[in-house]
Length: 175
Image (cartoon, rainbow, N blue to C red; front, side, top):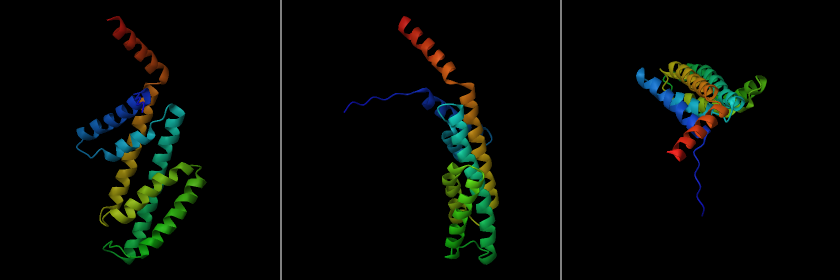
């Protein structure tokens, strides 16, 4: 087996974007998990793929988060303590259908998967008293991560990184 590992510019930019997110969140004493996930999902090989991947992640989180809040609010009308009952399955079914329709309507079909993840987390894993703040925090955190990924990709376009790496390589081979 020939194992050839290559650390390329996208690897470095992805790691840099996630690390910047974590640093910023550490400075304000918040959990950086979802911002880092947004940065990792938002990094593409160039600006157009970053906008596509980041848009999928952000709009999916936005659609899924808002939909999850609305459906959970309806659910706690029936079960004010937020406890799990089979009615939640109906809410999930309806939520996924609506999520797909909304994603299609806004021409973001790639938003379905991340939106579905957030929808499921809100419906099945978020306490009833924190579903709104949790949902809003996920939307904001994801947006911050995506923005940082896009900024890193914009600040470090392929041409600039290749030039820097070639210059660094020349210095290593000369000295």
